[in-house]
Length: 273
Image 1 (cartoon, rainbow, N blue to C red):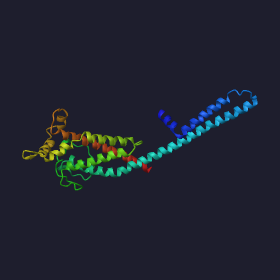
Image 2: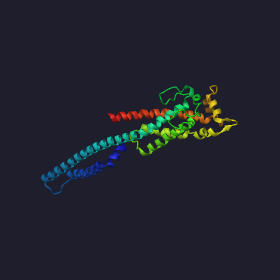
Image 3: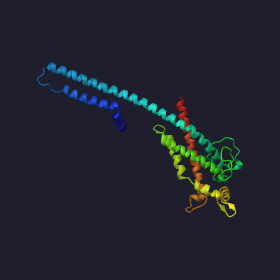
Image 4: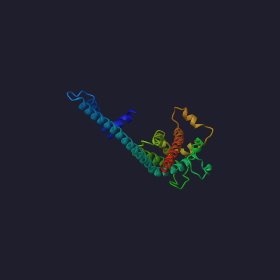
């Protein structure tokens, strides 16, 4: 409430109103004061004139305030519409990145033998063992056909993160706070749960005559070991820890991108109303 009053006082209408209010008060004081040697009739005429002027000034204050209110309301609507359109403009590119991300998200969370679906949706309902084929050659032709799927996934995850940071820097988000919160949380999770250095670094490491990625893949697929439980209760370094952290990152990011899509759909509907 106080912020609104302060904002109004700083506006043109507020400043004009305060000046007129002071003038009105002065006129009212004069109107009810003693007029020395003036006759009663003359004093009454002057009082009536000043009282009428003060009343008119108060009326002007009310009128100016209402005009300012409608101007502010119009500015609010224009600003909100501009922000809506700006978010949707950015979304045209971000939605492409999300589609590509979704493709490789599926690639690293779905075993090759089970990848029979033709629809591409973010599915957070996967088990840790489903990530066992992340080091397999990317099986989609969109990009990086000969690269490990996890490498291509991280490339698009990075694009989304960087683009979201650009949105946060360039859009004021005065009205669509929920979208801002989603973007901020995605960026925060992407940084705080980032273990790509370890996960991608393991691609070139050998363990004797065997690739360490093959050992890791077997461990991920081993349903007899609950790595989520093991890592969650272990204070010691473990080669599987980065993969458990990636598991949680994937879950969180899928949830946030789903929420983002829902909020953007609301904006598109709002624009068309």
